[in-house]
Amino acid sequence: MLRQSSHARGYGRDWQAFRLYYARNVKAPLCVKCGGVPDSMHDMHLDHVKPLSQGGARLDERNVQWLCSACHEAKTRSESRVATTVTP
Image 1 (tube, rainbow, N blue to C red):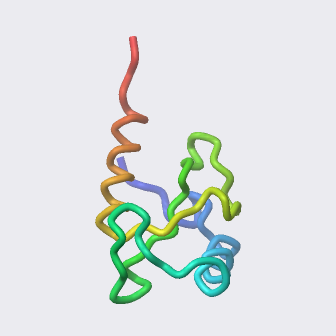
Image 2: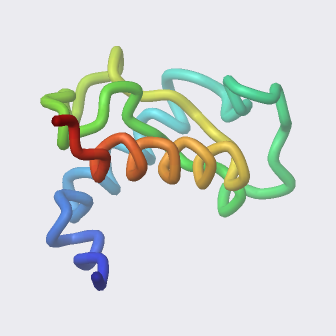
Image 3: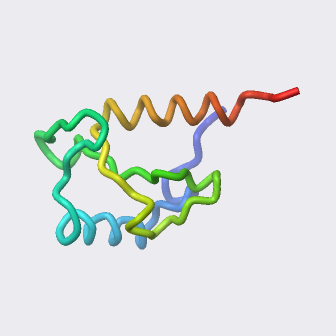
């Protein structure tokens, strides 16, 4: 199944503005999982602690955290497995 565009998933202009604000004013980017410091901001992802698909708030500073690319990919894979698991 193809993934929707970032804009279609709710990461349009307002999310980009929120991410920029958060990066400049709230917290220095440091991966909360592995403690890694990025070589550049392209290596960091502002991740929703509680995924939007599970009712997480999209533009709430209390629902975001910095993750490096590797930790973000692992978290996303884990969430995808949970979402696709069918319980009897």
